[in-house]
Image 1 (cartoon, rainbow, N blue to C red):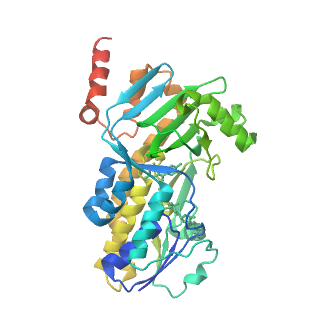
Image 2 (tube, protein in one colour):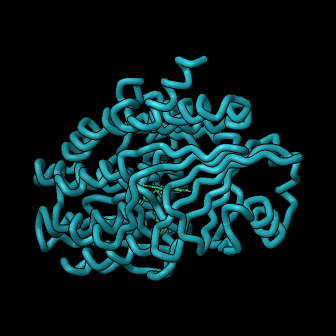
Image 3 (cartoon, rainbow, N blue to C red):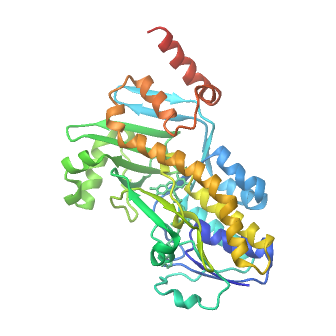
Length: 378
Ligand SMILES: Cc1cc2nc3c(=O)[nH]c(=O)nc-3n(C[C@H](O)[C@H](O)[C@H](O)COP(=O)(O)OP(=O)(O)OC[C@H]3O[C@@H](n4cnc5c(N)ncnc54)[C@H](O)[C@@H]3O)c2cc1C
């Protein structure tokens, strides 16, 4: 079998590894990546402890290979004007995006798969004659954009703007800081992903973005603006950029996940807002299922692709729905900030629509005890 993969992100690299490891060590795998081997956009990515379990269950070896490189902590902190409220959490882990890619490159290399770097695929004809062509090329997928009608792609952009920064300040927990100034409201997701590095992801609503005229503010000036606004959190540490620019998060659906011998995986297929931290997990789970389906249907690519979609679609839909509900909560975060801080945090916990009160009492007992006590005393 000959498999062409566009993109050496988590989905592409892990698929290259799994195809040879689980199906046949002689499968021809060609991966093409536009970026250099040792570079990527963004900073760290976070997983919930539970989210890593998927990997442990299906591929303990890779789980055990990645796990020692992760930062971990248990709680989450919500930092509001005048109140810092801890939420006892289920536990989180994080890893630098580049570190994860380097680890996955090593996994791929262990089965003889080496991606070709520094080359952007612009013409799909280079994959003519391949049995399978996989779009692991992220949110702006060439394959998906070429066959929009065939995949039935619908994309809608969320009005909030976000900027993916990092910093050298190592934060103790995953922290959500919410701040207002004369321009409007801002939120930062910040967490440690290496002993001396944290993700520092700034988000703002459209009204604030326009009022602050961030569109015409230069890169350095924007960094300076946020270093001043978040000086108490940054504690003298600088904001670091890495291909950081204002973006809007897309909500995306596909009517079909494959067309002929081409298939979508990872961010090419779906997006899950970073507030629920599941995009990387989804991408890796997609290729686990795709590999299983190819193995279950030897010599019949179409049957394998149909099985892949049938198995994965309901699971992806549940997570993406939760991510989109969480994303919608952020649209109105400035209004939510008008609430009493404990009500705000309660609303934050419930933002994905997946957490009942009973579950909240299980996963965050200390916070819920305090919240319930305050409600009763009102
Ligand atoms: C701000 C932000 C924060 C996030 N935080 C988290 C988090 O905390 N936890 C989490 O789990 N997920 C997070 N994610 C999501 C996560 O980054 C993605 O879900 C994940 O990277 C998807 O993996 P992928 O391999 O499908 O795509 P990508 O990682 O996007 O990889 C696609 C690759 O394809 C390459 N490529 C694209 N087009 C071409 C081409 N034409 N030719 C050659 N190469 C090409 C790209 O260079 C890239 O390397 C976050 C995303 C964003 C935007």
